[in-house]
Length: 193
Image (cartoon, rainbow, N blue to C red; front, side):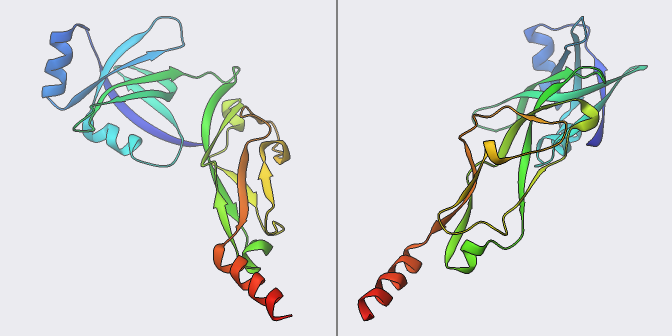
């Protein structure tokens, strides 16, 4: 799993006034929980943007004063109009405790169904995965070469070592659909016979 370093400042005051003052100075209030006592801190919008606006999942090394915490980003609240981050929750991780994360889905290969005129459709872009931090993948890779028209890969078909997929077993991850053009061409061929 990729590591992202983020530097923050511990907050002394956590009320509305101090939160508003932080946002005026282009800082985002944050909280770190999961390790006993909650830690309130702030980070700059610019530094946080590099973590927020990416498709990747990162282990975050939070530098708060003299201490360094391993964490994952758990929840982000955005402003409804400006779409700026208003508040971020981080969850502290430990080597001996499994965590649950949403991991991006990637496909590889050229599907047989696509060669036959179908269209590859990735219906689930992220899967909820439970694993220890050392086993957590950056992405879940699915080979679609043997996928024919009308066929799909479901969660129950996915097998990964040291990883448990938390989504429902019948959720479709990737499928090859028959396109209208391919269906029309097939009907045209049948009528010509």
